[in-house]
Length: 263
Image (cartoon, rainbow, N blue to C red):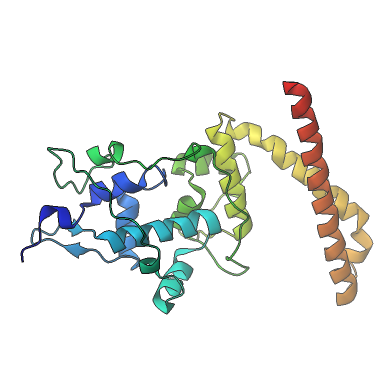
């Protein structure tokens, strides 16, 4: 039996399904994930990509792992290959596609007509959602610029601005790598930028962090200089305790101020 048009989706229609939930996704991003071996859609006789339900669910899983767990693509791929991530178990709904009349296969446009036609309901704007705590990356894993941009949701221009103000240390191509801490910085910066705060104003947060770090360094200077691993380990533990207490104090003071502002 011949496959009908409704049996698969074009890349533009897939974009339309995902763009509300994942505003950073583009046709170029989907192609990039294919080039990295994370997805493998079929092709029509004309060479266009054919996405089935499992392909769409796999994309959802990949994008969720990047956005919420900040996992690099190589780790996501390993988890898929090992069966730790099994998108087939996540499928509990049909495509939900009602093709608009006149929609044709489009491979090169960034804003396919379906991008505005098939959007799942969300409870809050995607640009203001707070990323979860960074987990799963670990020390020693280097993220390239494409992965960093994808995980944080930052544009290339925004990354350049953050680098120019020292929020993110600038890199020299092609030796570009990012740590899990910089991913957390970038993801938080993206939310502030989306709320209209200029990149230059983020220096206020950087200055505050530098002052707190300087104070911790002064308090623990003697222990930090010790060669004894036990003393250094104790100093590290104390530094984390001070940092966490300071963060809680700062949050409490801000919350108290906000309450007064709106009361």
